[in-house]
Length: 109
Image 1: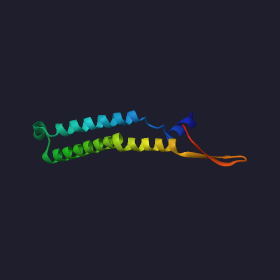
Image 2: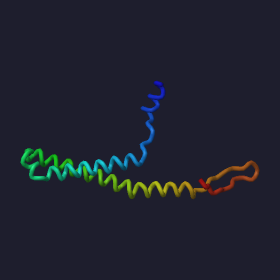
Image 3: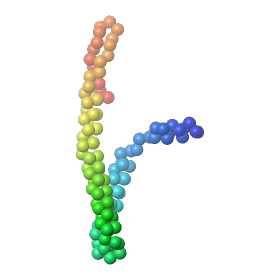
Image 4: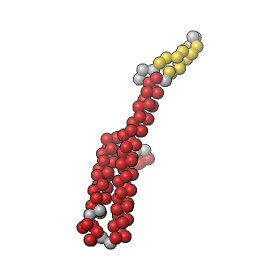
């Protein structure tokens, strides 16, 4: 049991892409809500101006960062994964036979 815990900590299992996308969507929604909430008249009444400025700045920056990361995962990263998949399917594999020399075969994985 201790060995399994050590193995899990040293090399955790990969996080599924759906969990990452779900986290990003929730973070975008949460920080978007905070940004708009800190922009209301009530926030100006109850929060000191310098604190309100920094809260709006930090939540706006976090919202923009999570949105940019989600857009990266949606476009560039998915294109990269698709290109790598196509390269692995189209790359010829070389095998050596006993008497005839080297032959090139197309891999159909």
